[in-house]
Amino acid sequence: MVILDASKIVKIYGKQSGAGSTTALNGISLTIHKGEFIAIMGPSGSGKTTLLNVMSGIDKPTSGEVKISDKEISEMAGEQLALFRRKQLGFVFQEFNLLDSLTVKENIILPMILEKKTANEMEQKVLELARLFEIESILHKYPYNISGGQQQRTAVSRALVNEPSIIFADEPTGNLDSKSSAVIMECFEKIVQELSTTVLLVTHDVFAASYCQKVIFIKDGLIHSYIVKKGSRKEF
Ligand code: ADP
Ligand code: ADP
Image (cartoon, rainbow, N blue to C red; front, side):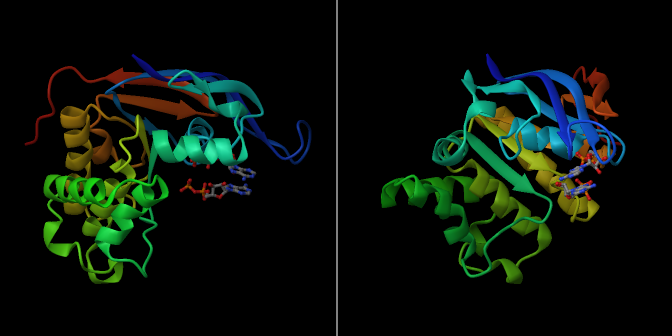
C-alpha cells in the first residue's frame, strides 16, 4: 500500500530564478509504502531537510505534488492542513521539542487532548507506549530532569499517540550519544515491526541509518542512489 507519493518536487528558495535564488530540490520523485523504514542521507546542503519538510507539509514545493494516503497535501493550507497533520503524521526532531512545563505523561497526552480522545483511551495509550519504550518510571518527571535518550523516547511516544500513518524524523539522533542513539533506533525498529508504522528519517549518522531497510542518498537536490538492505542487521 502506498502511503506517500511525491512527484517531481522542485523547491526554489528566494526569487524563482537568477541571483539570490537557491534550488534546493530539483525534481525529486519518491514513493513510500506502508511499513517501510527509510533513511535519507546526503551531504550538508543537499536538500534533505527541505525534502522532509515538503513531504510532511511543513513547507510548500515550488512545483510538483505530494500525496499522503491519497490526499494531496501540497494543496492543503490552514486548518485543513493542521488537522491532517495532527491525525495522520507524527514528527520527531533533533531538539526533542518537548514542553518543559508539562510532565512526560502530559507531553505524550497532549496530541490526544487536541483530538478529543476520552480519558480512558488516553490513559491506555500512554501506558502502552510507556511500556513499549521503557519510560514508565519517568512519566511524572519533567523533561529537564531526564536524559536526552529518555526525552527522545518521550518525543517518539508523543508522535505515535494518534496512530499516524507515517513518522517523519529530522536528525533524531543528532543530540544523542551513541548508546542512546541505538536505543532510539531500536524504538523505531519496534514500531515498524510491531505496529507497521512507516518511518522516514533524515540523518548524518551512518549507525542510525544502518537500522533502516532502505537508505536514499540525496545530492544537489536529486536522488543520487539508494540501497536496500537484504536480511537482518548484524552487530559485531
Ligand atoms: P540539508 O538538510 O541536506 O542540509 P537543506 O534542505 O537544509 O539541506 O538545504 C538545501 C539548500 O537550500 C541549501 O543550499 C540551503 O542553504 C538552502 N535553504 C534551505 N532552507 C532555506 C531557506 N529557508 N531559505 C533559503 N535557502 C534555504
Ligand atoms: P540542518 O542541516 O541541520 O537541516 P541547516 O542549518 O541547514 O540545518 O538549516 C536549519 C534551518 O534553517 C532549515 O530548516 C532552513 O529552513 C533554514 N535555512 C537553511 N539554510 C538557509 C538559508 N541559506 N537561508 C535561510 N534559511 C536557511
